[in-house]
Image (cartoon, rainbow, N blue to C red; front, side, top):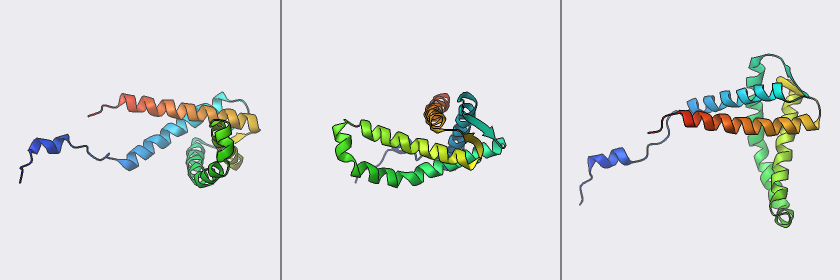
Length: 145
């Protein structure tokens, strides 16, 4: 039987700590992205308080998760069309679902209201880009072991 070196334990990958803290940070970053989006895109107006923006961000995340099974089924059903368009249809279908979710949450009036399809499309794109950038900046600013 071989004996393990005690230094090997320190070299092993540790599981990520603070799952709830990471979720909270991502939620705050997505809320900041939504606030910026509300003020950038014409046709999207703030409504309610900043607390409503946090609720809207939670609703966006929850509805995106709930729309995922429908999106998977649609991708499977439209697979020939996706192959024919070299994946462009998959991108378009995902984009349309994102826009519809954004417009639906805007219709709820929690933090923002959307007036039309084009502002919803611009808002979905800008919020996605901002959330990705903010999350990347936050990760880059942290010290990694």
